[in-house]
Image (cartoon, rainbow, N blue to C red; front, side):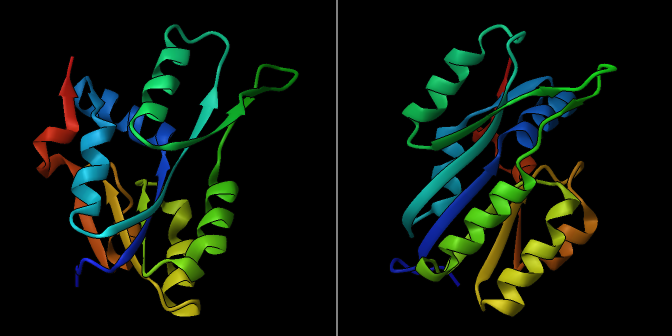
Length: 166
């Protein structure tokens, strides 16, 4: 149940959201509208975005600046390239640790990701810490188990202001 004194933390898997919007719609995400639509009339304690930096992506610095200007605290990790060309960069553990650390200051944790790897986090926040957990993602690409485990699932496809057509 949403009420104006409800303390909310928003944790955004930038890579997951960016690539889902790009591949499903050929579009971008309006992060300002995203935060506004998710928080509604509640009290936003913190919004953190988790991103991976690649030296080869044109316009990436401007994208990160734009995210910061929307009020999102950005955590950036460099893309790791291993011998043989394998590339690795994910924030799953960092995002999970931050959500658990902040949970005592929040009534509701909003995870903006469709990645099923976050299922144990959702379960721990709900059953271990007694927090309400909302998951926001594009319904077509989100893990069915993650959607099911959340107290509430927000299908971003149903919020037109969040999707910016190119």
